Length: 218
Image (cartoon, rainbow, N blue to C red; front, side, top):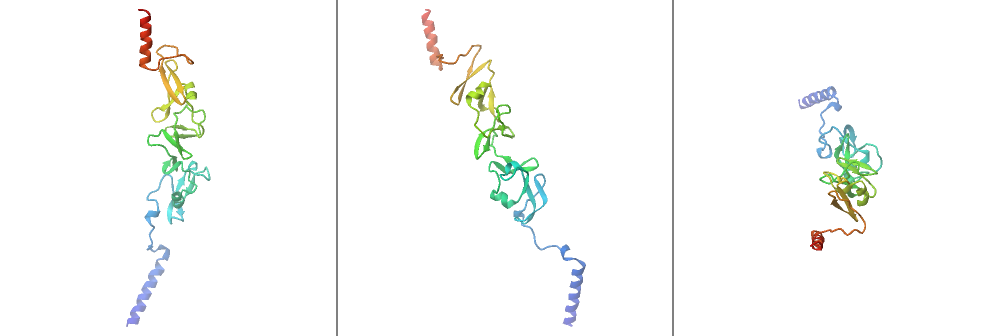
């Protein structure tokens, strides 16, 4: 009796497997969500299999954020985590259009990372050579503009909102550079002369000159 029952059960089981192919059976395995992206969309290719992370979905990293190519490329989670071929000046957690990888900037956006160092973000139109653009302005990889070169065009290297480079009309102001330190002189209609002219630089100096002038006519 027991043998008949077991034989009948075996037939039922065999028929069930034959009706439902193994590849259509619900799997007992589950992907580890810690190894996969919880969402996809812009910047992702959800149809790509990430072999190292064992899950579907890969990030598209912008070419500018990569050191081995300048083409937008699918990169696995393991490679991203280890920094393989990732330019350290870029944050690959930030979406930049259709790919991930935006240049790192300071919180206020006035500084940007170039070769691991933070440099000024210049307002549009300041730089003669623009090597990169960021949200708030432009960046040069070379030597930063000097005080004197900026003054020639009426600019000084001070924050102008979220970028550097403030303009002063030469008809109303004169920019004097002491090294890389600019001094803004309000002309008030006067002609400012450079050279060995001994201008008063403090209120006390101005008061002394005024008193001398006053005493000489009284």
